[in-house]
Amino acid sequence: MKKTTKLRSMLTSNKLEFLMEAHSGLSARIAEEAGFQGLWGSGLSISASLGVRDNNEASWTQVLDVCEYMTDATSIPMLLDGDTGFGNFNNMRRLVKKLCQRGVAGVCIEDKIFPKTNSFLRGEQQPLADIEEFCGKIKAGLDARSDDDFCVLARVEAFIAGHGLKEALKRASAYHEAGADAILMHSKLSKPDEIISFMKEWGNRLPVVIVPTKYYSTPTPVFQEIGVSTVIWANHQLRASVAAMQEVTKTIFNEQSLLSVEEKVVSVKEIFRLQNDAELEEAEKLYLPAKEGTKAIILAAARGNGLDELTQDKPKAMLEIDGKPLLARSLDSLRAVGIHDISIVAGYAADSVQSLNVPTMINSKYETTGELASLWQAKDSLNGDCVIAYGDVLARQHVMGLLLENHGECAILVDGDLSDREDQYIGDFVVCSKPDSKHALTENVTLKKLTNGQRTNSKDATGEWIGFVKFSPKTSNLALEILTKMNASGDIQNASMLDLISEISKTIQIDVIYTRGGWIDVDDYAGLMRGQGFAGNTL
Image (cartoon, rainbow, N blue to C red; front, side):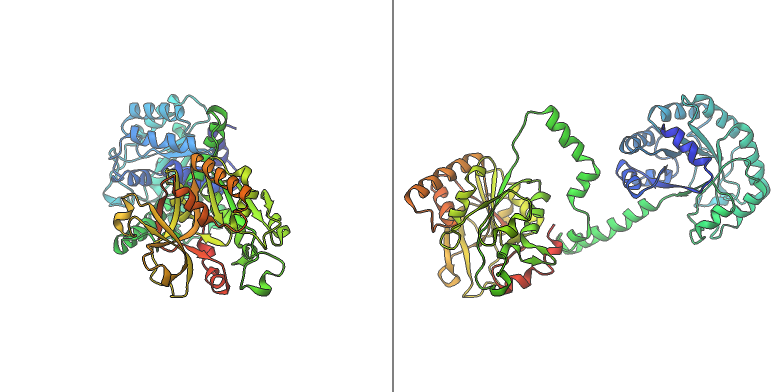
């Protein structure tokens, strides 16, 4: 069904229909996803989103451009708040012609003088249009439409201007005679008394649309009972977005940080979804040469020391964090940043890992071998852009994003804050070309040395490697060469990822990506406890 036909059907429906305000392609799509069957292209919201007043300060062509974005973004009809038609009958003809071309389903014009002023601003001071002149404008719009189902609505401002029921009925009747498809009866009272009085006298001669912005406390069934055709929720997406933007912006300004607001706003991934990036991704597959994406290999073969009965039937990577296996959360984190080609190397209780339905390789000698022996099992996946990750480390999405944004040959994630590490803490400490500071954000930081031991043996450390490394295709090939030689010599059996990174650093510069927090190493009971509550904010 055409959008114009859909709107006409809504106006003439036997049930109460609803239109939701929208002022951009994004807000229009959100309204459609919420379930609304029609949109109201609000003049107030569109002008406000452009940073101008609702006094025809935005030109009709600027409004038209916004309408096109909204109609392109949705499959539901839109009724445009056309103010006064942006001029006389000739402007009205031009407006309707262009609205039909842009896929707008209808326009509502109000019987005031151009340029208009918003109805809730000094209403009694706003002069109404001459009835005959306004009727001519309605007829001009009807004659200009290229689709007979395109709807022209007449908005009566008599109550707004303080003229009462008699004038409202007089004007509505004249607009009906001129051919209007529906009447929008407007009121600024906090109760629907004016609307109810009009409906009693109107007698269902033509569909009536209302905008209960001021009388919002009226139960919606009342509108159905008095015979209203359609209700417009006129500006609430805009008002909601303003409140959210004010709160978040003020917080960022005061705190000079994003930490406390990041969890209050939608993810960038959600914005991409609303922009329909999935369609573009499919189109790229159809029209662009095939390009291999980034892979990931997760090492999750170990049972985990110090977790006792918790790992009797599962490896530590399958322990639940806030009700979901740690490894499943790692998969979510990788997928959230666009990595979907993921392999897992399992060992202890491998069946539990295979239940995740991800390609899984088995290191059957997990009890007597190290990390590189596990990585060797996934050698067929070690090519192209590739991320190697520990299965017992949980990282927030933004931390993974930092790693993927690096386009060097090799990069590692390093926590530059060692202030809370105890003397007996054992970690993969690193020495970098520069310590973590504001300068590290703009200058290239590289790896100088890896150390593995107690903090007392790593006093010169500038950070701790958190268990994520990214290889370019060149580095993946080098890593495979190193692993092949180590496997042939037998050195691979007890070697760690640190050994591999150390060998790579002899040939390739390793970039350091600093982070401060945003990750948890679930290696013992303390780590498991820290993970609870952290995981809900990981993605």
